[in-house]
Length: 504
Image (tube, rainbow, N blue to C red; front, side, top):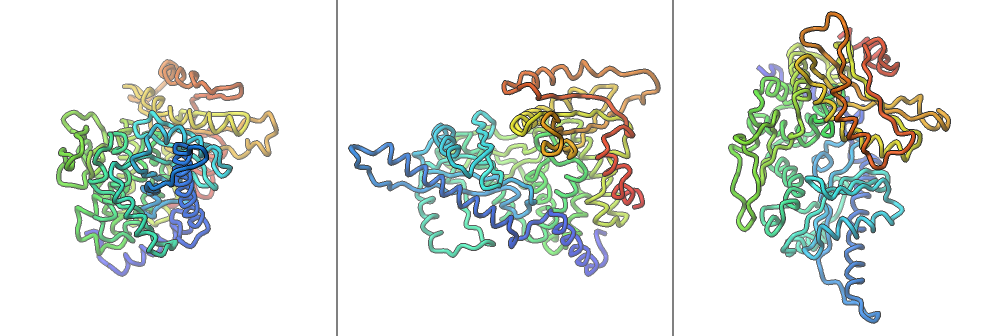
């Protein structure tokens, strides 16, 4: 049985929630961070509205006389972890700006991007117009935002939303986000529909999951577990927040009785389910993939298992159904599966929360490692160079996987604080580290294995970075456990946290 004592599980769930709040995995609505996030969203919507009106003024002004703007103002819709209320203190905000049809994607990625860059509150702006889902990334009032674009062909619903919102009181714990439905997809191109997918998936989960408070606690715990165990990163080919949200929503939908489960029981059932899941069998929130578009919506490509080579498919439940985890390759799947099984066993043995969420023995379990060191000599170089190198590391991970070698990547980046620019002097580079465990099949008995040729394609792409300047460097080296950097040894091998993990 999942549990025998309900009162005991309620107490365990309360302990779990306290731990998550204490370590920053749950942000409470009263915190300064939450107020800053709401302010950033309101500021962004104000900026978008101002831009639309200024653009209209510039387009219609004749001899100093400008035509009054009668269009519909844009709105910001949040989605993902922030909208589900499961974000961490260091999480960014996923958002979509929904415009009237008079605004095109070309305008958004040119004029609006320029408009944002001119605002002193905006920094670190990066526009990626040619991505599968086009996005603008930036920092606004200290909050990182990933902003998508879409425009509706019929703005009647959007206009009504703005009018109704004016009638409602706005408070920190109540969201007045625009609700997207199938009618909003009419007249949209495929890129806009994909951009709306994240919003629609989030709103689908909020509608279908019956006990959202416990769902949120459990999802925060799962994310904390994944981060600590090196299994949380879309850019590295692991799973991210929306993937784990879909997995947990599947557990809730498939177990209607979960509405009355405490968070601790839901957490346990999550690991029971996916430790035994036989991928590539897809995880779905609906009974079948909906291949038919809504009325008056164009046909688009929908995920099809007959055509797919995906390893760990987690499907979005709205049209067009897509695999949200298409980046996952063999090494990442192996790591995720291994950690799921290990944790499922620990849960059956009654392991304590802090041992599950704060102690990871990955580095103690392995002897050989590939260490990637990314370095640069100043802040401007460092952030650009690290961002680019991180985006290419999936290529290195898969290239090192051979018949003789298996790669076990740890999805976390580490900074050596002793190399900070403030304390290291003008010539001291700042370094970012990434580690992969290396195992041999059959076990290596003697001699050496040359992996250099397997890194050439990755290095070629890294060296082709157009923004690379003197001082930007990347090194790939083999190391063994006892020669890992001091900060890794302290945290995972020799330090008090590692010792507590061994004792448990």
